View: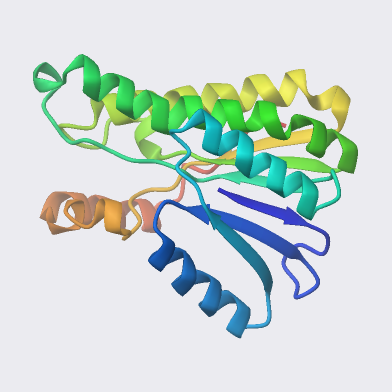
Length: 205
């Protein structure tokens, strides 16, 4: 999750982010601050309700009760055949990919409203629009839920001057997707999508 306030995209912007891993967080903060960006961060496990509440409380203090942009980019995946998924798998994926983002939006709403130019950006996936490969049914369902949440919040919170949009990219080489990039068919699919950008981000408003 990333929060921005003021001068977004320039060295005047102030951003804060979080990670479950202190080492990775420190590496990222060092990289960004070296480039001249004003960035802070904290360790947070968004699966934890208490951690989420603590995080947004800290964001409120840091940004004086206002927040311009909230980026919900938390996500995980479990690759299994549909018949092999357990109830624990289901709960873990939906709690991580959907419930955490939903609750963070609830917590951040007063800050976004106070800024009068609030923006929420969800990072979804093309898997929430079409089936991308075997083993992605549950992951795709969580991203489909994010797509619909984007549209619903865009309508409901428009009166508060909060815009809500969703970006649904194809495969991106991250630690989460490292194994998937060893799949030759998936890599070819990635190249196809990049060369044929007929799908775009899903805009709520």
